[in-house]
Image 1 (cartoon, rainbow over the protein chains, first blue to last red):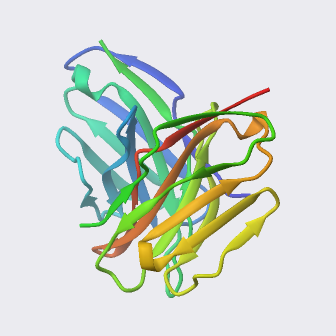
Image 2 (image 1 turned 135 degrees about the vertical axis):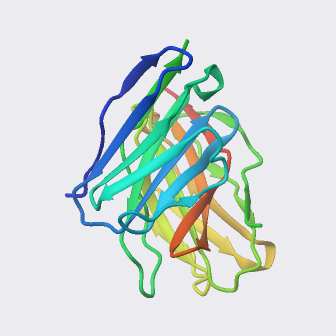
Image 3 (image 1 turned 120 degrees about the horizontal axis):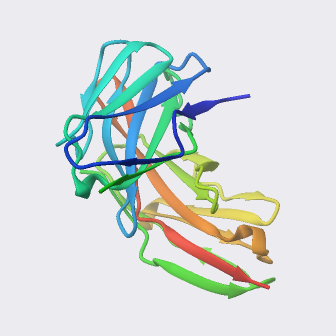
Length: 115
Length: 116
């Protein structure tokens, strides 16, 4: 069964802290994604990675960085957390496609509150 | 750029009513994929359907059906005889190639509440 896990369901951090959100998938997928979800805005892509050590900016990368040292793990880093980064963060993975677009598999989400 | 519009933000119905969720998209790609996801209160997104741009056949899966019309760039989702368990936020999404991968552009979501 497909599995994407995220290190925490709920997280509370202080302004200025460095925050790490971890995502692990056990499906040997090449592609991994980080989104944030805010009411009325839907899901917005922060960063994604299509291979180990590869990363690409999504639509809202400012204030975030990522790391992909191993295929199964994709980390989202908030270098200096700010209150406007309070949000739900969702990780997803996707196998490499040759001819067909597959669906992305999502983790359960991490609700981050920055105070 | 790709865009997905879900004009309805919130709908409330009574159990057993039929409900249609609208999705309109914009793309310049000739080959693309459309998706619907469900997000129940637990928070995890659940994949419902994928449709490619060359397949305009409607699809039915139990109480769910999807109507894809390329001429109007719409991919609407109908739930027949709604149930309380259908209460969730529903997202429509469109694929877009970027770099070495395929990313999804999501609509803003539509919250469906089914009351007993």
